[in-house]
Length: 441
Image (cartoon, rainbow, N blue to C red; front, side, top):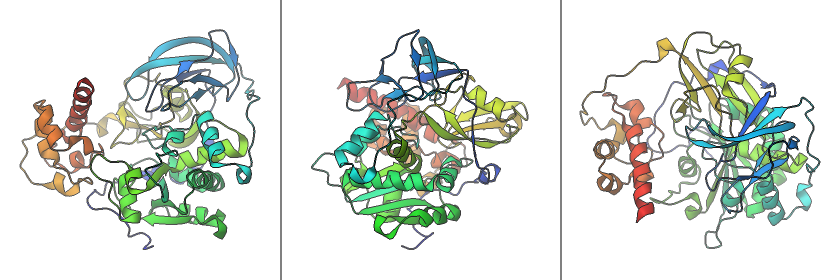
């Protein structure tokens, strides 16, 4: 393939700010005194607790599960005692039931964690391991992986893409995972390949991470039949439909899914988590998080237990360097602003950004001048100015008619808008109204 040149139409070139952490090796974060583990960290049905207040749990023990197909079980990230089960806010701004565990300091692992031999596993057994490990998409969408890797029989899959683009500014967690866990990524990729029974397998990143390309190539054997691809650095190259288009030339239809064009896309950290589940029987109870920004004293890439309060991570990075103006979970383009430091790290938490007051200012919103820049950069080829205009008037039918539901909420339109219109924000809000309307009909 034409390395470094493959890309999609549209998009923007945003300042990267990755130099704060891209050269910093992953450090193991301190385990929290209290872990607040949400029972809903995924798309789909929330879990029910399967432990009670007063129970002692071990690391990796399943503590929540659901009978629904589209769901992902949750596991204890520390050993200790269940103190309470209560409603709490997560970094996404939603409130959900959380299991609160007090750490007893033993770090005792659950006896159920057993290593497997990938060569002897069937596709069905791999899916069962992924489901039991509670693995969900770790790129932000948090779709249960065992569901993604079991498409309907009328949707044959011929291509798997492991997505390591990590195009959001500031974030370097996936980059460091590729550099430091390349072998586990390959094991996970081979497991996905076997589960889906496909031959075309790519690991994709951007050409600003050529060291990751070399690290992956060094551990891939010819018989693995896995190709590493460096895509052009551009935002939102990490969107799964943009990755598909860049590598295969295929376009997912309006309202469609990657499986409609024979593809499955999985995040690089998800592949690593699957590797962990196969090699050591480890469920998804920790992940790498980038803690960065000009407002933190020591930016770091940390391996963090799920349920760790974001305030704990700030302390472990030396605290605030300046008075914070905004704290964001995720990246600056698609992340969620935080209003308290008690929100816990969840499976979809790839970053924690701290901006000082001087970097945060309220923009003056001006009238739209119909310059067309938002149309030029929209990776889905929508008309953000019209969708937003109808959204601001709460005209659900008109916004839906302009295919608002196809918006990937990347924020490229808001970034490029000279009038500082709330394009992405308003479209995101009207999409919720459209979903509510469809549920009623």
